[in-house]
Length: 355
Ligand SMILES: Cc1cc2nc3c(=O)[nH]c(=O)nc-3n(C[C@H](O)[C@H](O)[C@H](O)COP(=O)(O)O)c2cc1C
Image 1: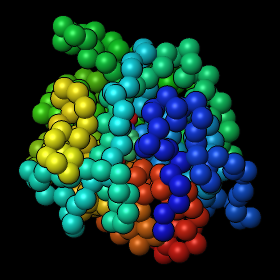
Image 2: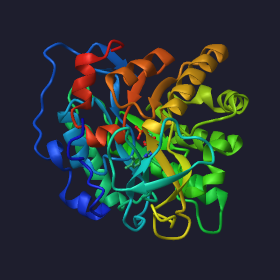
Image 3: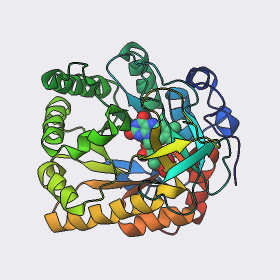
């Protein structure tokens, strides 16, 4: 069942930022279960291990509305240490996929957001200056009641000259700035498709390790979650975990999966250079998120590690929530489905079996 989305794809990012959230998220008031929280997420009590991953909650107003609507683990959209403009509109389009997204598939995009709901999103990880987002994130984090926890997501900006020392420094600064907001969990995006789809940071194991070590030096005992892309190669994921898995508190996966996206007449659907291929999310990528959750759970046991698994990707129904939990996810999150279904957290609390 679809409602008016809380992020409106027909409007620009700035319009959404200033005037959103929309639909049921526009006028929320807090409502909480009568019983105390029974679950834990990285040391924090939570009512339900369900939330919204980095992306659709683009500022504190969106995060607060999500908390009011019972999404107990909302992630404040990925920020940077400096201002960065958003890619040109449109930034979200519906894509028609029958069944699972397959490697190399070309998709037709438009404004049809009917079930089964999959979309492409292309923002370029815009950010305001820390002068804006630090107090905004701090206020949103403080709004969470006992039983809820706001996660702050960030990433570094690769300098134009590719200077890796400066890149690492920017991760340190970002971690420090997010920590200062008082969030109880920090997430670093190692799978940003906009920093070069072929060269996602999480596929560079040595550099990922350096980045994680630098961040941990800055944030001390504050829990750190890393956001990973889908790994087709499980041996490579094992290698990654061997190097990095012991140093992190949680792994969120998956991010979007890139595919070629054209309009009905075969033209590039998203205007501008480098946007023919774009990240796909929603029901067509659920198979990949589930595969990652179960592979991470198996490797975690084999390697004797402790990180929490945050299952992401097409988790848009109570049944999908249950599938993720059975696959081994400690926490489940939905971006695409939640955007069009503001009652999703309530429905999961009412109907899921694996809470
Ligand atoms: C509108 C939108 C914006 C997103 N922006 C980010 C982001 O800034 N950082 C990030 O790590 N992931 C981002 N994502 C990816 C989601 O966190 C998630 O990994 C992906 O959408 C798969 O989940 P889903 O199938 O429930 O949408 C975004 C997703 C959407 C739909």
